[in-house]
Image (cartoon, rainbow, N blue to C red):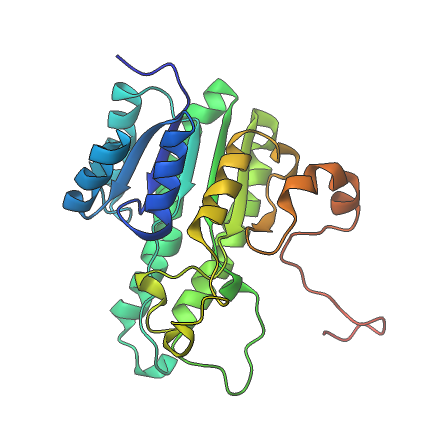
Length: 270
């Protein structure tokens, strides 16, 4: 019988940020479906949290649709979708990458989010209720210097920027239907994906953001506290997100927490 508690679907839940998020949501009253490709890790998570393990490749449209049908049949309508599954790819100059390897990063980071939203949003729209969190990254926006470390590759940077714009578009499309869609950066979290890019600071405890901070923000979004900021991009480790709802008029007036081109007074780009 489906649970009467709120239902959350978390992708990329077998390890790293997703595992922490799934565990925290389960601990705070959600009925959680934890999806990833590593079924043995999901079973371990399920044993500790009670989460429903779902083996899933988010780039497979049929598998995603089937997974959502299963979750809603066994647990109930999905109230919160956390699109966390991600791929960093490998460093090196862009022109040295094989096209399929470069594009695979986009498939997981962007297509995967689209497919999960495509499967979940119709039910949310019909119920006029639901929240979606699309994990992006600070890599989408930070300046790239001439001596930029190529360990963070162009596919990752571009895909994470695409997530922010995809989120804003979907939020605009669903704003009249009671659905909230927010993009977020979890901060720089020490996970397997971070190994190559941040090897030089791996042992520096002050460099890293705890994954629990990202889980806290996702739980906060799930509560509805930031519904008025649907379409915005929020950083778990930087922004004072617990007070953002108090500043909605200012945020809206100045179009803050969004990806925009800023130009100089004379019209030249900057």
